[in-house]
Length: 634
Image (cartoon, rainbow, N blue to C red; front, side):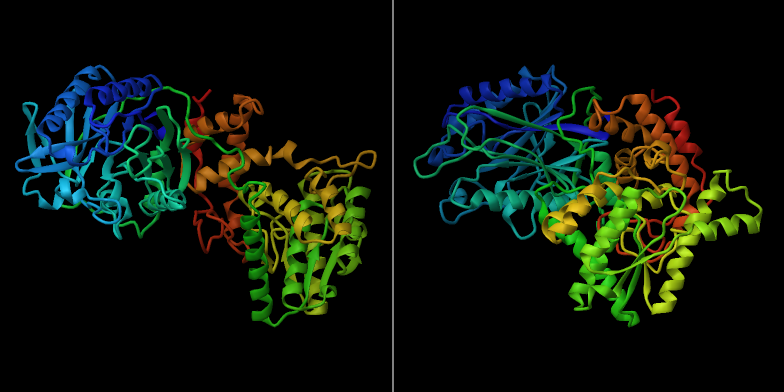
């Protein structure tokens, strides 16, 4: 598996009812087409060798014999291909007929999976023709001169493992795929022939997505399509590929042509999520059969979208954005009601982070039915403050109707430089951090004056990089942005400006969004910002991308680099990505001591850096192992 991905496909061939030769030709063509595209495992619909809608023709020995004959031909004609194929057919064993999935690869039959749950209600009459796997008294069968597994409890593969369930199995209260996943299967293939009814597709799609999430697995669903009998039913050719609750790819329904739906499943990610989820209690049942087969590593284009901003919901996803903002306001509201405090104190710089924190404060007041004047916004212009940011800060606070205070830190910092013997013309870390700590002292003392609570403005990206002054903006009484990465801060401010704030304030917020990110600690040049954060620590969109995959999936630098090149193709060259990745790892490890004593703040997504929650890391851990892996990436 190249970089931990396995390329899979759901194939929807055109079929003719009871014409095994025609069907086998179409299936063979699609297997070869899939192999050319680098697919490593392809799944076909239920009973695809004969078609699902044969009715009482399933009793005909001629049809059963033809299904076996053309299965053997398929196996022989695809023996030269590095691909696993899963094809449905009726198979007679003893005096019973079973609805099975045949699994074969490189000229070998790996096993048969018989269907367990047979629908016999509404338009379905499967018990008329087929026996359930529960009627089996064996778990092996002799066929084509060899013995192979004949059981629903079959897990195939090494590295990436898969199992199979058939159509109705998914619709039961406890689908077999639940147990397959606990037995080690990372992928579930479902051969289906679910017909179309009004509203059924939406429910079916939800089932597949939810089952992939419940099993922390990839789920490949292939449903019967054009060519099935339309005597009483219509089959639309559903094909869905999901990974842990996320739909990766789907077919066009009601197409009259065959379709091959391809996606790459990230086995590394699934494995990482299973390791972290202690409720996912892996157990290997004694009743399972395991067959090893290997997937040859291939370098093929990735059939999945890699989002360059994995933290940021789609622009139209207002529900998620509202939920994030509500979590922030809910957290602050609980802290205020618990402490009995009804005032908040916040430093407002005219930048994005403080704008979002300010919006959280005023909306919390609105919900608690407190006057907005209970929010005390403080501007604290220093040596690097520009007229643009100061004006935006003051105007925004006025438009939102909060209490405004303006306190210059210049005199206090100059006095401090004199006290400690620092040359104010030396613009070093002492020069910068003096200003950050002076601002924090002002906020804390104002909070003492008014009986208020200091609300922190720093975001999760800054915490990851340690881009905060220890004992300065690193400190607050509640950090409402601590679970929000920088890329998401921008989107949230945009969303609140568009949907929840007075138009006059929204206009100011739009200019704040367009302002370069800067701590404004160095003197301005010609009245403009001279210190752009992203030229120092790197682009936040890259750092947030790295952070997402390091924390959520525990990926190695080589895999993150591989994904970054795809996500940011045409935006950053390979050397630039690798340069900032090195910076990220160095800073992330070196700055853990700041996160180890960070203030309380709400978790809003799957990732958080709180030492009391998601991320517990020694402050003196070495990053050499990670840096060494990056040495040979270019």
